[in-house]
Length: 205
Image (cartoon, rainbow, N blue to C red):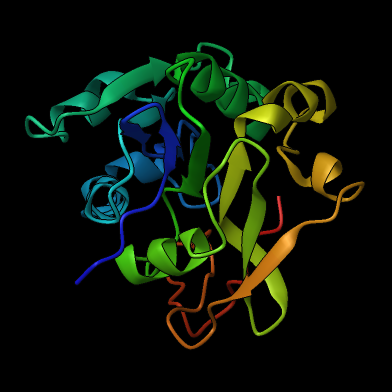
């Protein structure tokens, strides 16, 4: 039976929120990755199936077309108007849209083609409290998803810049690493002819 993750406040269990970053233009790919195949809905469904809630989706480039692909899924859409700045802009917009009482957020990227529910659940086995700071690794390479406890959000936002999200903050902290290389490659797909066995590498942004 799947394990429920979260923290207990009074008699209420607070589950971690899901945060999907899908705002980029996908310049190397040739189209916004939120519009590629089923990447957007697959990523949302992986977070929801792992009992993350609510799920916040950050859109930017081609955000209207991306909205049309949600097909009625119960998500919160945050728009990064300055998406062209890079990953930091998406992260700021996403964290701003999270519920104030969420103990943590599970952050993932839309172009991780083979990262699914099983990876999210394994990373959450380290916990999802306000002080949690966890990231997936793939054969020792750091990647996504990451679990960001609420106590870290302000520091992460202060450190994020350009196309660097939480990495600068992680570099100065003790982060729990969870090996997931047996479940997925963790590779972000940047080129149209790329497969998970090709040029991609676990994203360390």
